[in-house]
Length: 376
Ligand SMILES: C[S@@+](CC[C@H](N)C(=O)[O-])C[C@H]1O[C@@H](n2cnc3c(N)ncnc32)[C@H](O)[C@@H]1O
Image (cartoon, rainbow, N blue to C red; front, side):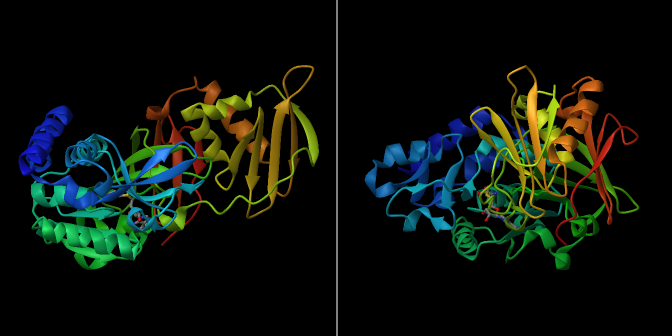
């Protein structure tokens, strides 16, 4: 059986094809980190799968497939799930290995670096780090105590002893600072300013970002001597939100109320990844839903609402209510983006200081949008 696991590890490492991370991929037993229970995504529900219900070969093939394996949904561990869980979010998983490695590459991690990882999850990526740069150089923080407990058991079983902490990674861990690299495996809405203080000048922060309109992007920032950080978005990625940064429940909303106006800006631009990213910059407190072909934007905190539906005579009819005109803000940002040539995500960048975080288009002097203030 061990031979089969080793063979599958070898194949996975070959498929991923990273010389720097190959030895770790060949050594770290993912089955130890995944455990014996995962959830399968079955459209509207998460179905628990148990190792005892499958042949060992099939289980190992699943474990060594280049897929994310969800181990917790809405706070329920797969081990404890007796029936499918419907309409809920995954809250912990082992990210697909190729994406883990791609992010480690983006972060530029190599021997000699001291690394802070946010989101231990199953501990698999933590173990890859330990194998490659040495456990004494690795600090990893997990928010969920049960997830952290299992990760620690797996990391110890695999023979590594990094610094493992249970808590909110958005606060970092000052005791082991300064770090050369900070890498997050959960998504933030805004870069916690405390991270800028815990990474040394010249060090980097690599973090998935996810706003409440659902647009995701990987931010890769370098910290300057003055403690500011700036960089770009080299990839589009979607990670589970960092727990304190998740959107509040959307609640109920009413369509077709408030001031009426007309627009020629197609709301379907929000189905384009960059269009959605731009809209999110303009209305960071808003969440959205499509009700057939009507776009609804809703800001729970301020009670602002907008909906945009096709008009019989062409264009779209807009209803807006509450203190913030959500569609107007989105339309302005989309116009700016379209006027600049509808550039894709690689044209955007982020500058973060202790007091503000600004996403820019083209260059720091180009059009800018402020990210919401959140976290430590
Ligand atoms: C995608 S999983 C991590 C995958 C992990 N690196 C692996 O290889 O298994 C994201 C993890 O981030 C954790 N998390 C969410 N918010 C967090 C926070 N504020 N601080 C630390 N961990 C957090 C979640 O509980 C979850 O376990």
